[in-house]
Length: 327
Figure 1 (cartoon, rainbow, N blue to C red):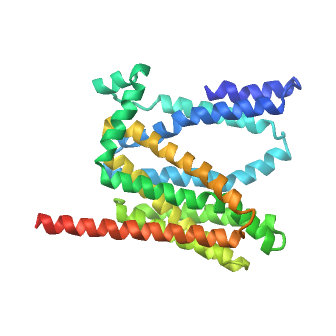
Figure 2 (figure 1 turned 60 degrees about the horizontal axis):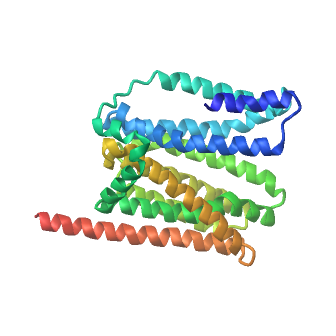
Figure 3 (figure 1 turned 90 degrees about the horizontal axis):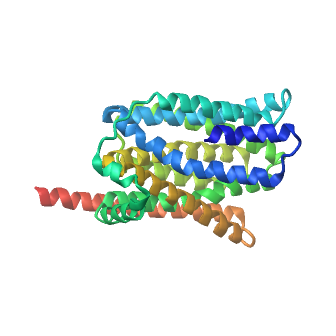
């Protein structure tokens, strides 16, 4: 569905009819389709892979995604100076077409009667309600979702907006150095993703908390940074912690969600992430009008560390109580 929608931009542009509002409508439709595609993309991996392959598969997927983000600026520059910006959309449509071809080759067996029934629109609300009731008794998943919400809430504004504002304010040629830092971040994330399967074959909630703590430390360092070396250090530490936490979360969801709840679990996770992004951008955007960017970085990094450590200690205490009871 994305292919003709994206390609329509190129055709309308060639006839001189492309306007701002059509771009807005296309953006909305593409993002809406992503709400169906992205959870399915993650949910299908446990169905087509073995558990022992999952860490490596998730890591490879994330490495490819981040690698494209690192290389894309080179493609952007090449397109701008050759065939023009409009043909970014041509390339986009072609890549969607290639993706659809390969996805069509994936063999997936979904023969559960319950899955077939739930595909009817009539059962949508019942299905959501059933998932909510089931989630109430899943302590580990609830903690995972809650900590994820807090981490993303504290990270979104400072990373997407605050870092650029801070560098422009403190460093000459800030925009130039911001681009370099993003490249540095992407390279560090790719390297971390490659190394994770060699360090851990299975990812656990402890590793998730470890990644979250490293991630929070990176944000705190950025909050006390005024010189470029500290910015590079803070971005590097963030780039190490974020993929550890992210891949651990995906692995745990794939492991803890039953097969018939994978789609709803990853959809709920996506809703949680989008909602935390919106709240973060709105709330911290308002605070930034009267609170310094450095202070917001310190507050957000401190909250990330505080909540992660609190839940980590709580998890360890309950785990020890469980072992003691079992003995």
